[in-house]
Amino acid sequence: MNALVEAASAVLADWRLLGAVLATAIAGVMRGYSGFGTAVILAPVYSLLWGPRAGVPVMLLMELLVSVQLLPGAIKDADKRVVLPLGGAAALATPFGAWILLTADDDLLRRFIGGFVLVFGLLLMSGWRYRGSRPLPLNILVGTLAGLLKGSTGMSGPPVILYLLAGLEEAKRHRANLILFFATIAIVSVIPPALGGLIDLPVLLRLAVLLPVMALSVPVGVRLFRVVPDRLYRPFAMGVLLAAGGLALFG
Image (cartoon, rainbow, N blue to C red; front, side, top):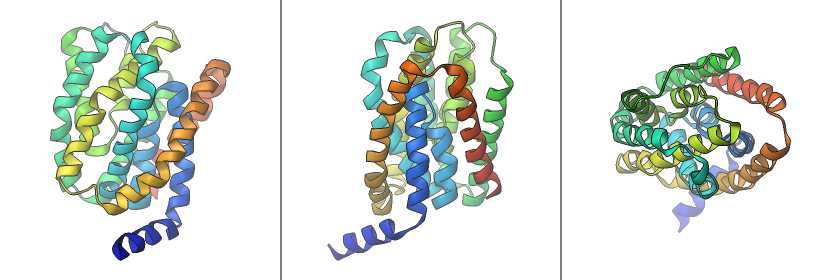
């Protein structure tokens, strides 16, 4: 009992928790609005605050719970023919990516996460998208790449987002596709860190503090999706991505 109290006191007294709370609130609003944003914001920020091996498991557990929260309202609108092969391939590849998380140098991995988010944000700002068709072999290839990234960095979104946003579907379909994809790999992604001993008491205590912040922020984003035009949301979202990537890369 004393060990639990001491660990909780250490987590709550750490100034870095305040930064994590702010980042979590912003990520929750983005996730509720667009269907993505949790990993690409929180992976670099949490890695900067606590290091990848301590920060990424917190984000993975949160991603799992947020996916459960959003999935019922999105599953009927998603294009399952495209998303399920993507998610299946990603789920199979995730454990292989987790080997990198368990063995890579912490500082090097943090800078890779920051640089990757920075490049992703710049690509989104440029308007570049994949413009081709979505045949099954390509779905599996993109899903495999996403799974390797999920396991190693906690971020499966960037290749899938650029790939899925290529179509002419309405925003509601894009959002549902992303929510379904993230849900299909959320459970698999937490297994390797758990087996590798990365989900320890400090991780669970940080999750206990940050999860209510995320739970309250996601519905705010869902409501904003119904009233805020995309042209007003996008500059804010892109700015957040660039800031998060830059902090992890150069911090």
